[in-house]
Length: 391
Image (cartoon, rainbow, N blue to C red; front, side, top):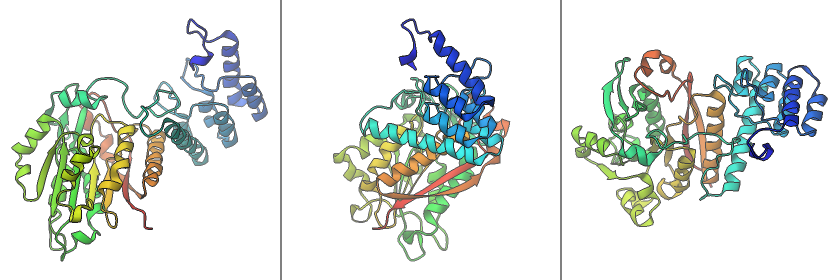
């Protein structure tokens, strides 16, 4: 947007005029008229003051897929938010326009993939308005992992009767309502694995981010007549208070459990420490199951974790999953982030299957009482299960 502003930061009057004409045309005029305005330089990114709607929002209301395509090709921002935090994709969903929503979602995935391809593996995330804001751009404990690791945490019971961990700013780090989702994660990761069968010795597990210990407890509870306990269960955790919580609960004393104190980057991106992480896995070939759920990390961090998976995941039967909560206050952004993750996992050699899980309790008001920032507002959860591709 900065390239169309004058030196004092104001948008030129003739550009505003074209922008307003484009908003009107997108509501009720022909596709050729819209294209004509775009060809004249009308800014498709412009949003009105009343609703915060862009031309793409108005086009979504018309339910004309071709118009959406024309605007996106002309520079419309797929994830521009109106005053209520809705993208044009949410307008399509509210009207039952699946085709229109898919056009916007696909453009989001294409745009994000292009952004990451141009940025390269070691480049910092761009702050371009066309890219997903999946990580807070502040230095609070919710927006910066290093700040979070220095913050004071609080454990309490929410109004929903479930335990939760809050950071110093009152943001939910992990909350008890997630347990049904964690149950499904562990079920999909363990039920059919060869090393979880009655005659096997047990699985090797790596979990990154302890939180309330829900997923780790569930991994330990897999023992039954048909499931042996994990052979080795390693946990990477960096927050000092969470590490004390682990010791207070005696989790570090469980046979086979090993706590690696530090950030995952300290272990998995350091060749010298990688051997320590892989100790206990059969032949040092990698873990049977890897789960990651960190706090105050964005998509760039998750993508960096994907890139180390080929070094730490057992290649034949290893299973990887992650807490899929990025962008989970907006259905379109959530779908794009999930699609983006699938493509980036494919880039490192993993195939991903998605399982839809309903979570109506996440919408109950009592879950969020006393929590500063909601991190979930969707009725469904997309659960990822990824495995190395068969050659």
